[in-house]
Image (tube, rainbow, N blue to C red; front, side):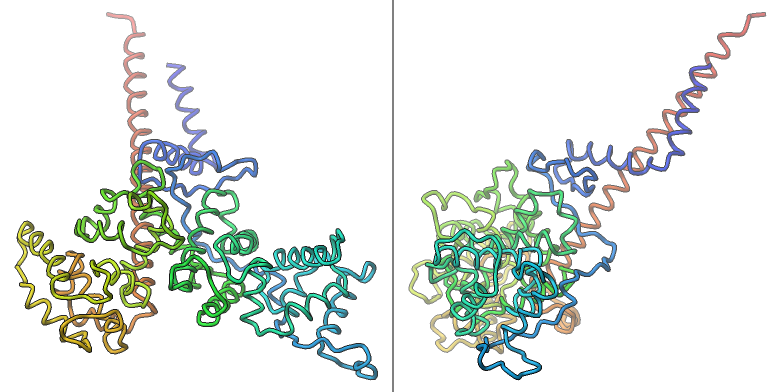
Length: 522
């Protein structure tokens, strides 16, 4: 009896503890992480000594924090007016106010380092933003580039930047070029004429360390790496449209990359920067990949990809994806046997948004079996035959090939009725519906949705806040994942509390039996 009372006292004391909720949540998440393959790791580690490198590879990245962050970085409060010329000393005599690069830098030196008259990496940020007009997280890589070029030229081992070093760097690397070329020259290697994949890594790492919207990832090194890979691959998807793995100056000029880098520096909510940097977009891409990668080797096989979208893709298009689809960084000898995470990003971005040039050319390459740059009736009929068979097996109404093709031709209006070329899909008046032909050829679920579409819903899509089909899909899918995770958490908590109640009842029954046994018989 005394033991039962003591257990009750301990239980009441534990339930009254301020940390009981957090303790139970940690226990539930630990249990789910070990047993549930779809478990999400949402609890951030409180100890700085925790190392996520030892975490299981099956763990999903944490959700984006719901609370609104109000902290602003101090370096964002400074003006960002670029200064284009370095006025020589002889031309500045008698000038009271000057907007030259030299005067601006001297003013900053007097404020941040009046004694040494030089810059360390810690106090160089104002120069990065105000003088060079680069985002604040370019500070470290820009500082290192100046030091590297100066030491290589002079044979020195300088560790700080002086006014003379800045003058030399500005006159040789910045002043003769416009903003796009300055950006290009900074990112690429000094001896190269293109930007490679690894050239972006220092800047994305600085972004991860500096941006308040990514602060919650500071104890998740594995997912910091995956986020960086995702951002870089998305950049190559949109900018490097020839899929050479090398971004040229011309491609930089034709893209919005520099504007996106500036936007993410000024925007506190990183999810509002839907071009390249959105954490929610990364979460959706990585979770979809992780769900298909059952053996956790970070490779997607043909059998894995067939399960994408509730088995919506035909086996014929899956084979073509592995054999002919563009890869972001080239093909290896065994690349036809699997898709890497970067390859999967290319696939998924193209699959969920068929209204842009990159995705149109991606799918056109897959469907153009003979590689002549034209889609003829024989090629389209071979893909659609698989769809007809699937319609029959699933009991759907059969749409003959001729009827489907006539409907699509009326929407696309090709220049040559005998065949289709990629440019036919890119016409401004039909770019929003041209993807329907690809869906008809290999994505049965989306084709049936297109056939049964509601005009009112389609009108709502055209008037909503999303700029692209991918933005809309990523938002909906992220909310779905969040709701599923919340439901699992509530279910786990209910099970835990029910277990506690059952233990209480068992203890009461045990206490009653013990009391009866202690009474003397009459």
